[in-house]
Image 1 (cartoon, rainbow, N blue to C red):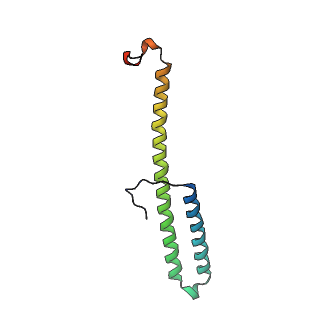
Image 2: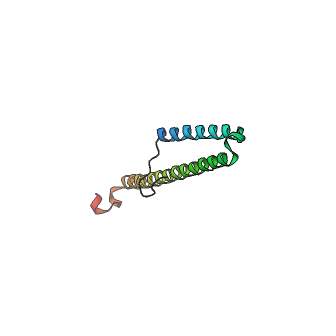
Image 3: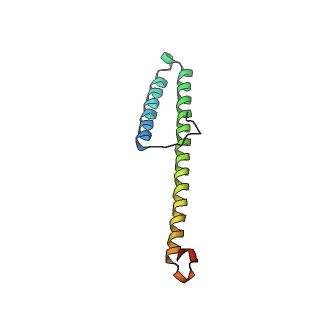
Length: 99
C-alpha cells in the first residue's frame, strides 16, 4: 500500500511492472481454481481477493496522479492564456507598471 502523504509518480515502467504482476497473479489464480482439490477453494478466493484489492489501490494511485497532473496542466494553461491576453492588449490599455 502507498503512503498517502508522499507525492505519487506513476511511470510507464512502473505501470508495465504492475500489469505484468497482475497478469501473473491472475494466471496463478486461474491455475489454482482449476485444481480446487489440491489447493482448496478458500485459498483461491483469498488470492483473488488480495489481487483485486491490490488492483483497486493501483487504480486509486493512478487516478490521483492523473488528477494532479490535470490540475497542474489547467493552472499552467490559465497562466499562459492570461499572459497571451496581456501581450495582445494594446499598450495604452495595459497597467502603467507593465509598459
